[in-house]
Image (cartoon, rainbow, N blue to C red; front, side):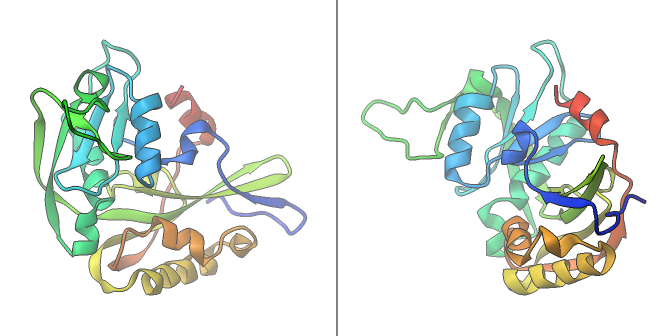
Length: 245
């Protein structure tokens, strides 16, 4: 199990790769998924990172993250499991969580071929809003559930890098050292975030040097209930970087 090393080691928190500016995870089949944290990031993703062959996924409700499955090239194929995991991420980071829903439908389309910022004549699209054209694929009754606040520790030379990562429950253990499973619940966002933070502080010496409660609050979608503290076995960072090239 990776751990933060002695007090002489510099502990770092923060993005080191381009995709870390967004929410992100790696699917069970090794596809990078990125998602907007807010309307501004949704706009950036669609305008600058959504290629014609990528897959765009969204919860069937206004006020959700723009989620994109990044494919290697136009001939690369996505499978049902990739789409299911991206759909679970989309519904979890949508208004449905705050509403206390347990399941929600999501849809998917072929990236830049079907998603556009061009509004119909006489209409206006606000920041983070898009038009979807053509046939949509549907994933019905997707469970709102998230591996949340996952702590990943990578040791490089004289530094330990700590990351908070969220992902669908089916893949979170392959990305982080410690995590909890969260679902919509009655406890308010701050209370749940404090519970998660206290669990991680007990297992990761040095975490308080770089991560505070506000970082955890940022990744919790809304009022929640959490299920336990689990240990993961994350893939090496070098291998992860190869996946997202």
